[in-house]
Image (cartoon, rainbow, N blue to C red; front, side):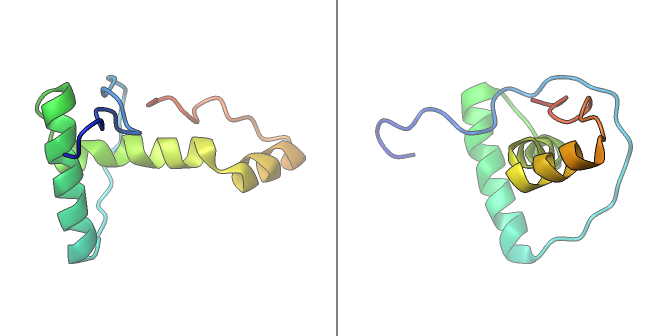
Length: 85
């Protein structure tokens, strides 16, 4: 970890109800996810790489301006978006 970097975009993981999904990712992405989990574990306590995926997806969706714009034009509510943040 480089000097002065002590924060990740993904903070400590909250608890939430969940549904099991199975995904397949390229090997390169899995290696990066494992590396992220290692750094995250040093900052926030032990976590498996797979446990980070729902939180990363929720953060991505919550920040997607295009998605937010489309949701607002269709009148769809975003109550659950960001529930993992």
